[in-house]
Length: 71
Image (cartoon, rainbow, N blue to C red; front, side):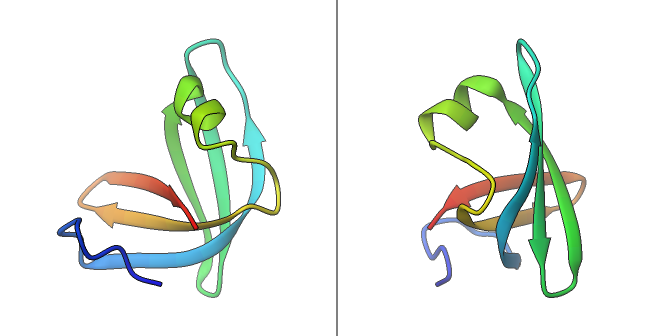
């Protein structure tokens, strides 16, 4: 799956490996075929996306930003 509505060239499919929760932001480690990609996103987004270890996601990489989309 590729996210067509978002103009991002680098999309890496993977599974959530680990989530380190904070009060405001959380680190989400995504295991991909090319290694682990880490994203720092709001804890609210982690909850709204219902991310858990093992969730299928796409890491969207643009410059120094890594976004997460749940599959």
